[in-house]
Length: 54
Image (cartoon, rainbow, N blue to C red; front, side, top):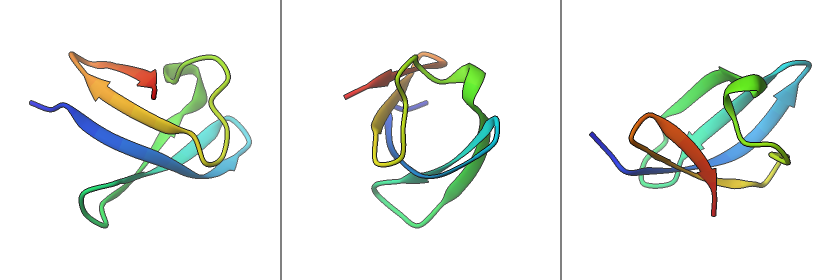
């Protein structure tokens, strides 16, 4: 599956809300699973079960 691109739209405590760039799907994920330096507005690539900042 993938790759998919996401944008971080909200951070609440230790969790972030991600929005897929190709549709309106959102997901809630722990910040510990995201790359160091992820912030609101960051664009992420999910591929091979790993997130990277693009």
